[in-house]
Length: 295
Image 1 (cartoon, rainbow, N blue to C red):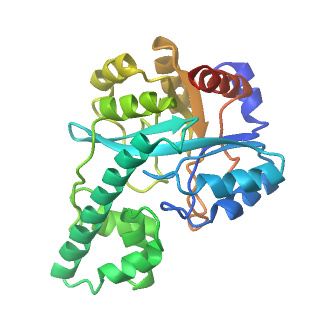
Image 2 (image 1 turned 30 degrees about the vertical axis):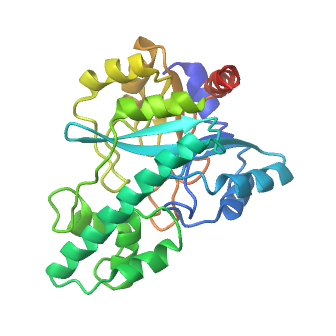
């Protein structure tokens, strides 16, 4: 990472990875936009898991505050033993083909959630699917909602502990989710006219279950050939060596250097908040140009 990027990061006005309560975030789109504005952000992307339902509300409030909102999404995929997330930017959420595919992905989340609750119940955890649904409140159900239920019920102190003790791989409540492949996710986003970006490829110490993609060297040529256009370089709690390593990957494959906090809620004080991390302005300019060309 060059000096110009370090300077830009000290003046962060961009966060390209944020979640609302339409997936597993704590805030409504309006509340999240307001928080971002108060923290000095002027360009943001909302990237909820497998859903775009929060984008219209977010657009209204961003417009009122004079902010730029990039329509985004985050798709969960599987490559060998790795769970791989693909972000999409400049999403056309009125595309019926995309919405049909997202509906299928959300059904997979529901099925997995029910199986997790069944496994936890079988080991004596007094948790019900109704409790998880109440917490999700109509959102795209994910493991974080089960984790929230475990915290509310007193089985864990916080969400991170709930993942560690009950929901991560090798934990008693873990259930693999039937997911599409990274290549297919990239193609879905390209067909929609949005810009595919590989999310958080390396280990994060503060994010629950966020591990390095072990087969990254094998995966990258495949998803780049399918149309990948960016990679998250500036993410969460990544240190300077991680940022430098992913920057080299971005340069090798001519990928846009994206980034953001991956903010969900304020429960964990170690987790980055909106505006704590983000890409430099020239990366945002590259992304916006790519979105403009694709539309």
